[in-house]
Image (cartoon, rainbow, N blue to C red):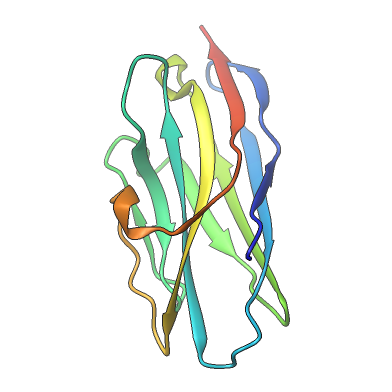
Length: 130
């Protein structure tokens, strides 16, 4: 089990910044490759993809966060580590943010579609006030 755990959520004023982190464990196979991503769910809305990164380190972003959010990963050795740097936050960024991961062989292609991910964290709340 990968066991993803998010941290770093909180409350901030509009225009502020937050950094989210996600940690997990790798499988033992050296052929496993991981793609990971951040998703969010606002009250009364469906969960949506925010930013994802494939196993080669190539990121993709939702249009709503391009230029404001940066996803990065550090999957050295036996651990998974994912970050989301959020700048110029807006009230509409308020949501529960979830970390997700998918495991594949040799290469993992990332997608902003949540159905592609098998492993999920418990979520962390981000609140942006006007």
